[in-house]
Length: 214
Length: 381
Image 1 (cartoon, helix red, strand yellow):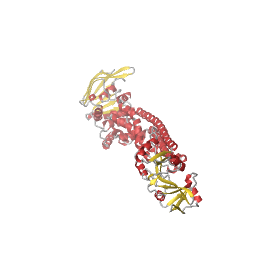
Image 2: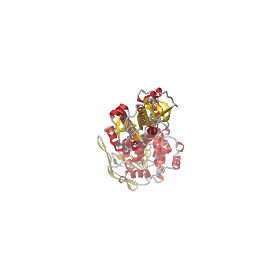
Image 3: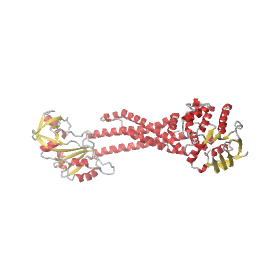
Image 4: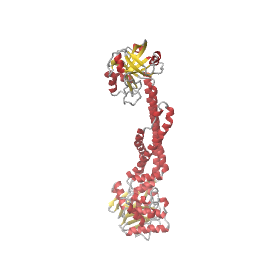
């Protein structure tokens, strides 16, 4: 599903170049649930964004579902991302001026209200469809973000600290939904600090200083 | 999701910012509409005031001796009456009022009067302007103040001129000029009375001006008119014409200066607001890009928003500018106050120009938004 080969990412900063990824090679098979762990600044999010067709690596190749992402045009990469990848962020990143339903539809390639409402229902959010994000609890916001990530039935979910802002109860619920997605054949790559997703993961990768160390 | 919904929802969400954008467009459109509408009112007022001062162009027979012309007040020689139509049909000459006259001093009941035959006035757009000279119906006449007083004439009386009985339609109030010694009658009838069929001795015209300030209007008109009226020559009331032309050009120049300044300030205002909007929405841009939105769609969000607010600003600005003019202009332009009305053509202009203007102002911020690296925003989280 995901293949990173000798991927490096060097950021140019005022203080000089910073190596976020250093010759990383990684393979994640379809149907795997992989967590990436490591200290802050070790390159976890950079790796996730590179795998998600969002961040052009300085070196190396990134192949997702057989497609070498950074050979595609920007527009084609956008279409690929929309079709094949669902993103979930720690801060949810819902659009505050749209309702829950509209946030989901904003991500839909072929917006159908009935599909969106059915998905919201399965996440226990149907009664919140007309509410705006500031009116939701943090757990509801993250579940909305999950629904938004799943609306196009992607093959891959990339999640950056999806439970980082949640209480244990809500974290467990988000984990359950990720596990269900994985059980249905989806691939999950999660960046996480804590141990709450360890039980769900089929594999855990440890990073340090831009390298995979374990 | 379609972009229009994102645009409208965001406008509702950040209404304070949208309100400031609308105010900028409103200021530009409102001032443009107010200046333009007031400018038109000023033009009408000036035209009306200047009109009362008389014609500013006189076309007389080429053979006329100016010394005699100025001494007796009219040309002794004549020119063909169809010169008026030739003048009117000549492309490239602007005029507002055109009247053919035949004047001759005659004796009526022992009194020396200036008989003046007047043709119906020719206007570039028929019936658009109020005629400058009396419009006399066949079989009637207007008599000057002294003539009426000396011959004890009043409206409805009959005055016989060269054997032709004319009904007095109007006794002209005292003017304090040779006008008081005139008898105005229908041109064709005067031509018959004076046995000069088809002849006139003057064409009077208002505002036959050359718009190019680098050319001498009289030279241009003389060159143009010599072609179509070989038997005529042109005398211009230079001071009157020049001051009028100067006044209009000066008004247009100041209008252009002021509007340039207003537009520059509003453009800067709009661009800054759009930049702030882009900064404020960095996360949103990153998320939309993560969801697969193309850079052009992101740019369209900002340009589209600017256009929507531009349309709203145009409508409100037109209403505000018009209301301001309708409230203030009547006290400034008292003679033509009743002619001051909303200029709906300006609304049509504003409805395409204002969205275009605000879209252009938002272009650079929109380009910055479109080219913003979404990964950088999302990494900063």
